[in-house]
Length: 95
Image 1: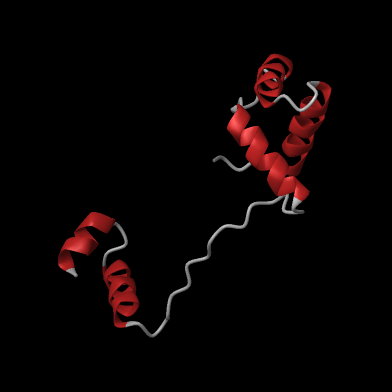
Image 2: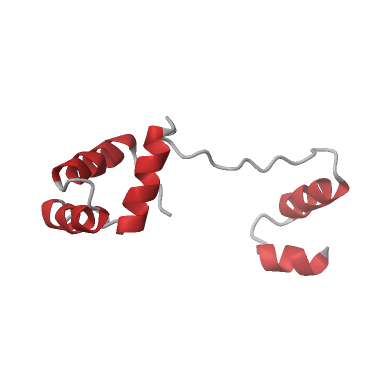
């Protein structure tokens, strides 16, 4: 699912209210009223509405943390330092 900003989520919820909680109708109304925006499906509107009810307007992305002392990280950084134009595929083959 794409990341929708809080303003877009509120607009979808307002359109959902105007369509009397009919998610399919809300998806159609949203496509008609906002032709320059992304057109969410009825399932997307339902998921975003549930997320807004739970108080999570902004989606939490996973943060991949890595250990800076990991030998693979040090090796990759050294390879990039030696050749900044190297491709990630080539680095993968060399490791």
